[in-house]
Image (cartoon, rainbow, N blue to C red; front, side):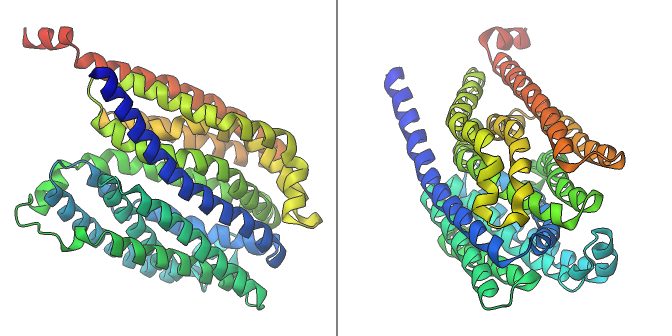
Length: 435
C-alpha cells in the first residue's frame, strides 16, 4: 500500500507539473517570438527605459498584499481561505492607490534618479500595474489551493500573448516608445486579472459565514508579512536594483542590452521553476515530518537535470545567437551579457522551488538573512567595479561567479534546515520532549 501511495503521489505531481509546464512553454514561446520582433520596433534605449519603469510596479506588486496571498493555500477550511482572498484583495487595492499617488507626486525626482527623465509622465501608471498584477497573484494562489493548474497555465499564455500583441501593434503603427510598451503591458495584465477573477469567482461568491474573523486570520498568518514579506522585498530590490544600476553606472543603451539578455535568459528558468515551484509549494506545505529532506533533494535533482542541456547550449551559443536573433549590430553586446548569466541562472533552478521550505518549517529568518547578503553582493560589485572603470561584461562575470557560490551555499543550508525539521518530529525527539 505504501508503494502504491508513492506511485499515486508521484503521478499526481507529474500531471500538475506537465499542466503548468505546457502553459509556461507556450507563454515563454510567445515572449521569445515577441522579443525578436520588438527589438526591431524599439531601440535599445527605449526598451531599457521601459524596463527601468517596470522595476517600480514589479517591486511593489510582490508586497501589495503584504504576502498574505501566499497563505491562501494553508487554511484547512475553504471558508477561511475565501475570507483571506477578500481581505488580501482589499489590502492590494489600498497599496495600488498609494503607489499611484506617491509616484505621481514624486515623479520628477524618481525619473531623475533613474536617469530617465522621459518617464516622468508615465510613473503614475505604476499603481495600475501593481493592482492588476496583485490580482493575478492572489487568484493564482486560490487556484493553486484547488489544484486548478489548468487555469493558471491558460492564463499565463493569454497574458503573454495579449501583452506582446499590444506592444507589437503599437510599435508597428508608429506609436512605440514608452507609450506603446505601456499600452501592451496594461492590456495584458488587465486581461489576465479579469480572467483570473472570473475563473476564481467562487472565492468571492462563496459563503464565509462560518469562517474565522479577518483579524484572527491576519494574526494567525502574521509571519507572512513579518518574515516572508521582507524576504521577497529584498529579492525584488536585488532584481530591480541590478537593472537600474546598469543604467545608472553605465549607459541606457547597455541597460537595454542587459534587459533583453536577462529577459531571454529567463525563458529556461521560468520554464522549469515556474512549473516545479507552483506544484512543490503545495507538496512542501503538506509534507509530514521525516520526508522533507527527501523532497528537497528530489526537487533539486529534477530542476538541475531539466536545465543542464539548455544552459550548456546557451553557454556556447549565446555570443552570436542573441545578436542574430535580436537583429542588427545594436544588440551585439547582449550575447556576451547572456553568456555571463549562465552559471548564476542555472544554479537558481535548484534554489527557487525549495525556498518554500523556509516558510513551511517556520525558518523565514534564515532566508531573510541569506536574501540580504544575496541582494547586497551584486549591487555592491556593480557599483564598486564600475567606479574603477571595469566594463559591464567583466563586471557581470564577477557578479555571476559570486551569486553561483551563494546559491550553492543556499542548497546546503536548505538541506540542513529540512533535516532538522524532520528530526524534530522523529520518535526519539518526541520521546525526549515528553520526558
